[in-house]
Length: 291
Length: 323
Image (cartoon, rainbow over all chains, first blue to last red):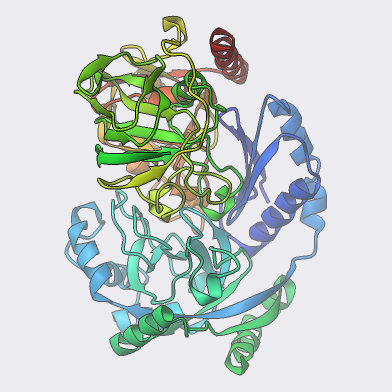
């Protein structure tokens, strides 16, 4: 790992574990950020773990920036040696691919896109070497995904697909970010999927939409009563393709308070996963099917 | 004790000093963009400095008071009237039940802060009354105020009329506005030529400027150091593997228009950042109108911390002059 430490103004320290994405970098960032949290360093106000990096916000009136930097660096070796294992859950998220709402939006912002002639999915399928959009969609939902970051806006998850690197899908972000994205859009940028938790600006390609809300500031939705944000880093997701009828049915069930996401408790062990990705994923999905 | 909104203005929101602690979930701290002016308004009416008030941008609201209270308006310069009679900004005055506060056209600056004695008393969300409209959180029903809203106000005795913030303590951006920047984060991604141009170029505030971020245009497109893009970043040279953003950080999607993230910042994303505006200058951004000329000035950490101390001293002076 090529860990890099830098300041973000006078109130933040940004630690990039690696400039490329890997689950190894994710686990080190998570361990290191947890160690900083557990150390209860006076002056620390926010700790943000990300995909392959993390950030600490601090009050420089309480702790000098260079002293803060030294404290974080001191944990580096210990964090690298930590076990890369998590007790977590796998969640099935229904996705209506090629839906009318994201399609309307992507047409509206075509001049900000790399390829103004087609849709985001046409473009993503082509540059990833898929003959058809259907094949690309199949590749997007056939294997599970790992929530490697929560953020951007209101509990938005970034997801990394649990497959070999040569099977990862990669697409650039829009040339210039859109000023609008429908709520619950399933997006894609770099090697990450995301779910836009709320309507708003965004730079990711748009593939579809889920009927399952993942953020509820009023905490009225049955499965968001305990906390308004659904996802946390380490969650595992399996996309389930659905059609318009199923989309409408789930939307209604959410409104009626009768929708319960399908969730199973699982453990994720990076070494075991790396040894046999197909077998490990099969077990994860089995646990979900039994739930 | 209430405020009745007759006209809401453009995007008037309830704000306080924010809700730190949830940025890791993508919920920004929010709060008044120009915190100096905001604190001043509260001090003028005898409130705690973090009591909730109104932030109005470009256009003032029209408000009918439901009870006797002290009022102060700070920040941008905007003519102000109580029942049609002119009133001074940065100065406390007392209103009677039924009186109406209204505003003329904005003269300088961008945002006014309206404080009332007792503070706005909507239910806090995650420890703050700040409105985060994108997340429908806090404020009045999670949104900007609208005509007909009746906003609850806390009970607190009125203070003397005519309390004034001295002119020397009213901090305003210069012309051009100078924003001091600490380079870092992904600064190394830019070529030396672009690093230099960023500070040499004349920028103006773009129309896309709000509580989430301020966009600038007018400078040269930026060039990036050649590299194979890291796995997961995306193919544009301005892309990175999505990381967390700092408040004040400057991203430049496609190398074209710098965006400075502000109080309602997105917490992360996939564009490189070249550094951040120092904490002491964040207030100034809140007072910039579109088309305002801007120069970015490079400073080091010592200068950033000195500016921070200077701003803190200014708040202390304000407290002393209004105690």
